[in-house]
Length: 150
Image 1 (cartoon, rainbow, N blue to C red):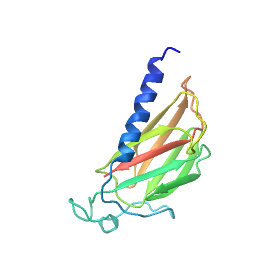
Image 2: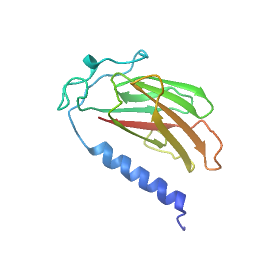
Image 3: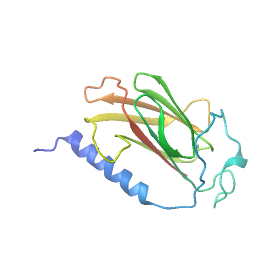
Image 4: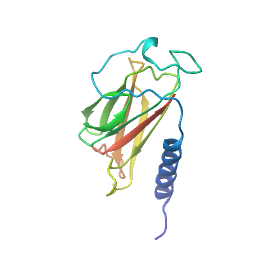
């Protein structure tokens, strides 16, 4: 089977997520709960940058209907519309990096080639805005994972 540019891109993104997922740093074990609007500096774990900018690895694995499958440090996941989601975390993530990947959060199965966009959520310092599309570019409800590294 000849790999298309999209297949090569998706394979590269999957490899990146595996590498990023294997990196270990000091992290906060937080869990799921309520959806705070903004997070102050006292909530973050201690680290090289102090309480406000401590080191942490956070993630959320989200079903296509917007429900949380599992995560660490994620406060909530909300489906806002077709292929549109908001994920909130228990700490300020403004100085962090975030990545997303389409895929089932299980050890079997697969999804069709598709696209994801993750950006900081406007109006808050602890959330990301996620959009998913099918391979034709149509907004589509898809399962995904988001990884935050601080």
